[in-house]
Image (tube, rainbow, N blue to C red):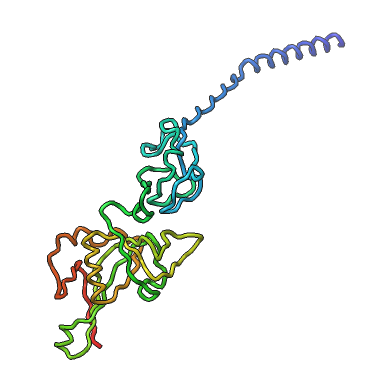
Amino acid sequence: MKAARIVVLTVALAAGGVAAMLAGRSGKAPAPKVASKAAVASVDVLVAKSDINIGQKITPALLAWQAWPESAKTGNFIRRKEHPDAMEGLSGLIARGPFVNGEPIRREKLVQGKGSGYMAAILPKGMRAVSISVSPETGASGFILPNDHVDVILTRRDRAAEKATGTEVHTSETILSDVRVLAIDQTVTDKDGKKTVVGKTATLELMPKQVETIELSRQIGSLSLALRSIADVGNGVPKSVSNSRKEHDAINVVRFGVTTTTTAR
């Protein structure tokens, strides 16, 4: 009996070993390691190291090189490979528009400011800067900031209507639409978290014909500003209309196709 038991155990152990060997061979081979993704190609692009305000002079301390994906649209960015001395080369230029921290520097937003003030430097070609007097009542209570867009409203006495009615008559009309505000007093940007700028003068960006309209209008009545919504910027009457419109009222103030409201007092 003992010999028979030994033979049975030996056969069982041998069979178990063979089964384990076969099972090991039949197992799937370990999956090959997935190759790591190739590193994204990048290029050094010149960016603003900190916020740069409109009218601010560019210095190397305000600029920095930052890695940028080479596949991104960088055609109008300044690349270090192509312009290694760009920091020094741009020094002294004036920002025509603001830059936020980390924003790529673009040459079209910079202008040469040597020999002129910052306002003349940031003023677009063909445009004029004209200042008008404002108060909290005529300037939207100080909520108009530089770079906002406004409508200019003329309020005047209508002498012809007064003769016909025998009472004092005032008219109000929008003489300029969608005009950009360059500055309030000498503030050209929203600085230090200011939300309102209450000033005595507003400097507007105008075309030459619009300057003539402003100068004539201020002689015959009072001017006020109406703040436009950001959503309405660019939706006003095209500025070129002032060059072709032939309609004039009795006082030769150019009308811009807006409604005139008349009130009697």
